[in-house]
Length: 441
Image 1 (cartoon, rainbow, N blue to C red):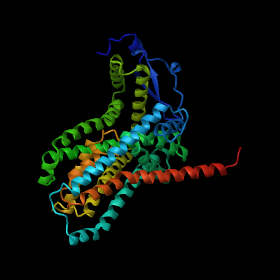
Image 2 (cartoon, one colour; image 1 turned 30 degrees about the horizontal axis):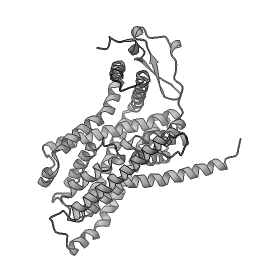
Image 3 (cartoon, one colour; image 1 turned 120 degrees about the vertical axis):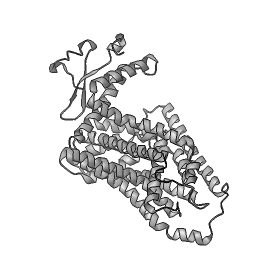
Image 4 (cartoon, rainbow, N blue to C red; image 1 turned 30 degrees about the vertical axis):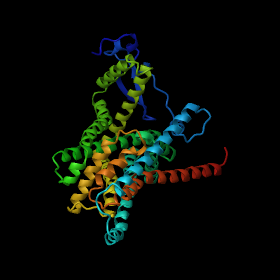
């Protein structure tokens, strides 16, 4: 299947040997002609790729996000960005209006009495404080995870820097569609604040891999438990939850598995995977889906090899790998727990024990998150709001599901943006001030 190739295909690189630059930890791709697969070139013929500075990646990402008011940005790019921003705002406002109408005007249940409402509000501060604690834990667990990896790689903790990196990573993940903006800024921040370039490049990649792996495992367990209702979800939830949610969750889970599965397989069978990538991209080229197949193949292989190398470095220490994986799982559970404590603050009750109720909410939140994971809006906006409201309005009095959704959305999404923006502004001013105080050489 892979042997019949035309002249165009022969130009595409196939990996026969993986090398890593000892200084930068960047993968070096060795292009081997198809007729020399069995006789790889000698070491003196290997050409190392020039290192791309993370500063350039940072500037490029700032231009993509629109934070760089550069004249080189075309009018078409500006128009597209403005149109997307308007559509995003319209979507969010529409979701708020629909959910508010559903809770206040299209709900047959009676409004709670003043006594019931005062009792609920009296206990709100306790659960809202726990929800805020879960928000803080999301930052702490991410910083701790990066710190353990940094200790294993460089021999130093760098907890303050790693915690700051976690704050910036969450911020840029939430302001970009499909959460693609976090890693470049994490790499830039680590490299700028005392972490060696090789470690700064590999740590965010390994952390992302562990996040995806823990997210996939927790979501898979949640879907399996939901199938036979092992945790005893209320009948109202089982009947009210749209049947297509489970199917969409399986689709989202399949897409989420791609990244960790590809990296793991490439670590075990690099040559086979490189040939497979070569075949798929060549097929896409023939279908006119890719303009430059050689460049695309090279970039794809370089990325996958780099990710694979980052995971190999972390997995060389089983204790580091296991501990950081568990911390990644705790980070996901903390995010889901924000929903649970927010609901409890508004009198949420499914008439089961607190521990079982928490597990049920974690299960449903995991299913929701994986089902909407491929929605191409920042923070999966729109889909997340709808899913939370229509699923968890069971167990909350009329008129309280909408404010519960607002507070949950603020804590689990907008707070990451506000905190990250404030911190990013503060760091930028601080770094600029320090640069001005430094004497000129």
